[in-house]
Structure formats: C-alpha cells, structure tokens
Image 1 (tube, rainbow, N blue to C red):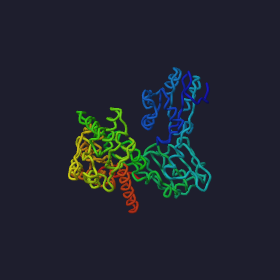
Image 2 (cartoon, rainbow, N blue to C red):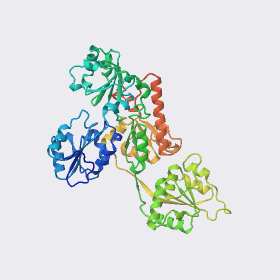
Image 3 (cartoon, rainbow, N blue to C red):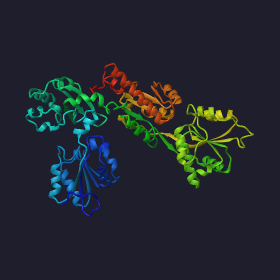
Image 4 (spheres, one colour):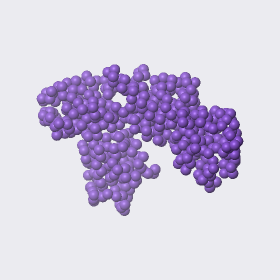
Length: 526
C-alpha cells in the first residue's frame, strides 16, 4: 500500500480522495481536475457536485452517494479490479472529514490511494462573503457545532470564530456565547449555500440572531461567523454584489452560438440556462449554393455580403467541400453586417472591406454601401448568402443603389422542439429573471415553443429590429444593446442589473431579483 502515488499509470487500481471545494466548481484544484479526466469511476454526491463530471470522460461510471450505502466497498472493489476511482469529497477531505472510514478501508484492503486537498468552506465562504478570516487579531478558530458542549472556551477568543453545522442551533449558540462573556452586540454573519450563485448572507449580532434569521429561509450547508471581521463585509463584498448575482437568465440560442455568451453571463454572477429555439440546417436543395460558389470563383461577383456568422460558416463548409480556402476571395470585396460576422470572417482568413460605422444591421450596411458606378465597378453583381427567412431590406437597398443581387439560401433556421415542462412553466410564471433575444427569430420561436415570458421578466434585445418583433408579441423591452452583438447585449443587461441594485441600496431596500418581485415569490434576506 502506498499513499504517495501521483499518477494513474499503474497496473493495479487506485482511489483518489479529491476535495471538491465548497460549491463553486471553479474552485476545484488542477490536480483534482486531472484525476477526474482519467478516472474510470467517480463516486460523488451528484446534487451539489454533479457539474464537476464535465471534467470526466464520456464513458466514466458514476456512483451517487445519495443512492449508495456501501461507498467504501464500491470504491475498494473497483480498485481491486484494476479501475481508477475518484471519490469527490465536500470541501477538503481532511477538514472535518466524514470519509476517514473510507480511507481506512482502502488502507486495510491494501489499495493505493491519494488524498488531494480542497478549498475548505471555512476560508472560501468567508472570502466570497467579503469577510477576512483575521483582521487585527491573528486568531482564527473553526469549530463543528455538533462536537461542542461548552461554548465558554470559544467565547474567550478575541479573533474570528467560524462555526460549522450550527444553523439549527444558531440562536442557542448566540445565547451561550453571550452568557460566556461575548457582548450581545458582537457582529455575526450567517452565510448559506456559500460560493454558489445561491449564496446569501444575513448580517446580525449575537443578540438578534433569532429574529433576523426568522424569515431568511436558510438551510444547511451554512456557516456562522462571529467577530469584528464581519464589519468588513460592507466594504469587501464582491461576490453577492455582482450585477446579475443569482439572476436566472434564459439564453434562447443554439448551443454553438451561446457558449461565449454563457461564460460572460456567469462572470456577472448570473445562472444562464440555454434553451435551443433554433436549429441551423443546410438548405433543402444545395444546387443554388453550388452555383454561387462556382460563380464566386469564376468572377461572377464584385461583392459578397455576409449578414451572419452562420452564413460565413455555410460558405466556409462549401469551400472545404470543393477544396478551396480564403484565397478564393482574392479580387472580391467583402462586407460584414457586424462585429460577430467580421470575427467569423477573420477566423476564416478574410478581412472585411466594408462594415457599418453606425447601426450594425442590414439598414446600417446599406447606408455605407457605395452606389454602382459602371466606370469604377467592372461587375455589378453582389452575392448574398443568407438564411431562408432573411428580410428583404438589404436586397431592396442594394437594388436601389444599382446593384444586382443573387440572394442565395446558405442555411435554414428551423424551430427547435419545445423545452421540458418545468422550463416552459418557469418562462410563463416568472421563474426567469431575464431573457436575452439575439434575433427576431428567437423571439418568434421561443414564444411559439414555450409561450410568452412573464411580465416581471426583464426582456433584453440585441437591436431595434428584434425590439420591434418583441413588442409585436406584446413584450415590454427593458434592455437593448448599444451595438448588435451578444457580448454587448450581456454587458447592457449587467449594467441594467447594477443600476437596479444601486437604486435598491440607495432607497434602503434589500436588492431583489426580478423573479422575487412576482406575487407569491419567496423573499429572503441577503
């Protein structure tokens, strides 16, 4: 038996006890992520830590401790069979650990094991709540309330006291600390669901724990923090004060399109939920695109105008089919309707010659487009590879300027299947705090497959045309991007959320998410 093993390259099996951290999946250590990526079996409590399975291989076996009694036996048996096992543990495996018996079982069975430290809640939750572990007094004490019978020893310390598993006895603990000499005005913070977007913190004093917790709706896991360090929270709070903290934001786009947007929303503290409303598919008949690509190569066109990243992708795929690359654009002028489309072109190796300087839309592109001049332009034809449901604005504008347009269907947008019933109910009942519409088709399709968002839901749109479509469906537009890009839309929504929070704080109110303002919504202190 060896506990110093550091790799899975072995003939026998192996068990790694990995600290999963306090809840935020981003706090998993690099070593933990590496072990997960190589595991044959992962043993975990799926409810809080299921998202960490994204580090694993597709065929990994998952054992949920919520449904498994003989966890140590499963791990040992798998390791004895030559399989590599990761046992994910809350926080740090050796900090108030509940898995010592499992480790002992591995040692007894002479199975190689490793213990990977994790970020403990005692420090992480305080940091996420804006409370320094130690301020002026270099003392930091952590206790498990279930193991304490006499609180007098812990009342004497002048430093920060952190209490695990004490929520149900919080009022009694406060009284005991007061009886042992702590002033009833000593500041206290109780944080629930620490380091996750469900985190919320109640700040009170030892003497007021009971009334201030009464309507908080808090449950374990929670930490009680006692001491003057709590007073630093107002200045150091950074997590719960993010502009969209805890906002459940609906992102009705294709998975491929929404990846960057989802990460940006998470950086603002939001909880994005992707609901596919559109599926991008090839045109029903490819001959039109085939002729267009051949015409592009043989010099039929003076311009090619791209109105979406999907159009760029469709042309790129056709190029690859014919063994072509970006060099086929030599001698052509290329236009892009906006920044996202331009980025797709640049990644293809093509720099746009024309982009709108103002509104990034078909109207904006037409406003910049030069009229056809037979003396300057040897060819008067423009290729427009677009969606099957594209508007006629660009074609009409270019025709008026003297150009002839080949309006070619490069791809089709197809309405996706309805989302699951709970998602549909949340959309209609106000369970989402905001919905982000990135095109008119996402408005039409979302309403078509799931119904209209509740009137408390913040409606954010990418531009004027999408706003008009939303209003046609009876939706109130609250946020519009200053330029038509998904990133700008996320920034605009974050700015809106920040202003709402600032207004509530200035009025002396507790900031609430939009979904918490609907009738019957549970309200809790933060």
